[in-house]
Image: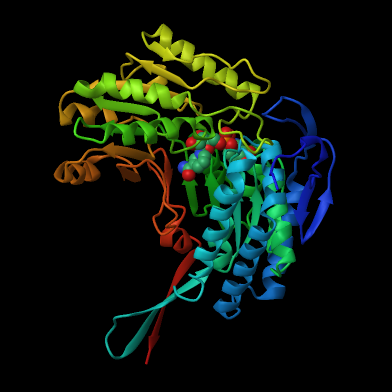
Length: 487
Ligand code: NAD
């Protein structure tokens, strides 16, 4: 059966999800579908009262279910049952996701949703394998480093991969024995509600996952500043990350993991497999129309092969077929909103005004919805707006180098250090660059994550603090207590 659907026929869970129940709400922020610009519903905005209710519900669920204190294997089993149900309901979840977001339905079932289920299973397995330690002490005492959950984790996610981002937060927090109050993006909130509904259907205690809808300034601020939120887990822009740090500092101190913006370089040396590099580079800026934190938007290529590589990239950038997210054959996504499309366009125009040459694209697409052409800009220096700004759209810049030192200098960004790509067949150079690149991830001869969720992801510089995925994400949801006993 085709996954394509009529967007006017999809029921959406509009409301907040607290204590295992959908609390209908009306009014709020008008929502428009990125694929055709049509207004379709409002996103309710939770005020401090509703946040209070959600936090109370999380605390009550922890107490009633003893989620943090049950046999850890019970947590594993419950989370695995949830992952199974997510897979079984993948098509319904995909339609809810595709309706509001930029994710084409044809990429969701086997992509984002299958990966999210796998990641929940991955984190579930930590529950009964990671634990406390005995500390080396003299024989008159016993030292223990006890590992414990925090209690209630406050999680906030962005709009670009709504299901996956919710999974990144919920999987490790729940496996580690916490309850969660999650605030998804006001632009794409409904798939998170449906995920939480599936958790309750799968047997997780009601109230363990609460989803509150709303914007950053009202709902996000009330959530991160709530005194009973013991830890904040955030993914979004560096600007919002700073605002959250400020709010948390003002309202009390608590640990935070912040996964923030990026402006990642892709370095290509003349000895690389250029066709492979071209596919990876074009793919990374056209996938989700470049609306990915790790998008490799700065191409830095050895001068002798720059022309050849540019021709190959130009060809591949234009290959992805645009269309509405509810058409199963769509490959190229719309931009999330008219406002974001206008921002992309204004940075591209500023880049050209500052001396950049637009080799392709540079305009909105003549297409219903908020589509923007895949864009390649050459002749940019380090001060060009297209290099400085995280554009969060399908815009690639190209710069050239002649020496390794030049390549390294160009790769370094004053603000961001999220990911980086390196294409070369020289093993020694690979190791040299893997050591020197200032980024939380270095991909070599590829530019994408694998499905081995053990590799953590997170940023250097202002791309963030702490990690999602991997063992580190699980441990970030536990705190340790030192216990010393005199014998
Ligand atoms: P955003 O920062 O505008 O919003 C993200 C979330 O934060 C939303 O839920 C929003 O309501 C909330 N928010 C905004 N201001 C807030 C505040 N003051 N207090 C509390 N919450 C607040 O980001 P976006 O436009 O949704 O997403 C795009 C950004 O996310 C890009 O910068 C991208 O690089 C980043 N991102 C990073 C990663 C990563 O793993 N590092 C992954 C995906 C997206």
